[in-house]
Image (cartoon, rainbow, N blue to C red; front, top):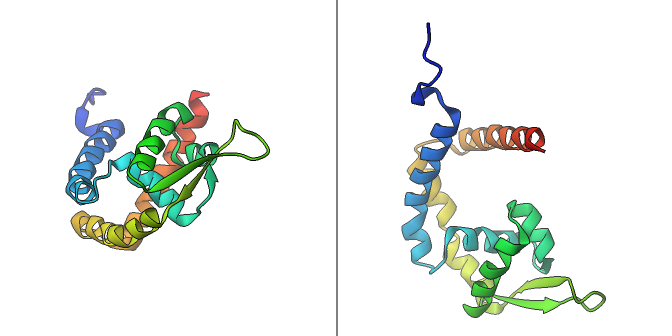
Length: 145
């Protein structure tokens, strides 16, 4: 009879510990840029597409806007983004990269390669793994609603 409470068989534990290990690799890279991981994700989102609403960024990062707003305020204080109220609807806040925010992209350009090297995996393998984890996340999200 198998033990249903074997920690080594828990997918959630594997993801949890892998997340911690990943964060330990990211930390010195992001410390050099004076960014937290969530701030880095927000910047990556803006580097891909500038001039986004808080709601758009929130949706892409799977974060509540109440969590995202203080993070964006800190990025604005650091000089990387500018927050502006929408002209048609003042409830809408638009986030735009500053010159410093665009320059930060150049300084952060080596991070994905460092993460790939640290993983010891091929890029295609990591893409497949990420795709599988995303399917798992989306399935669990639908189940929990």
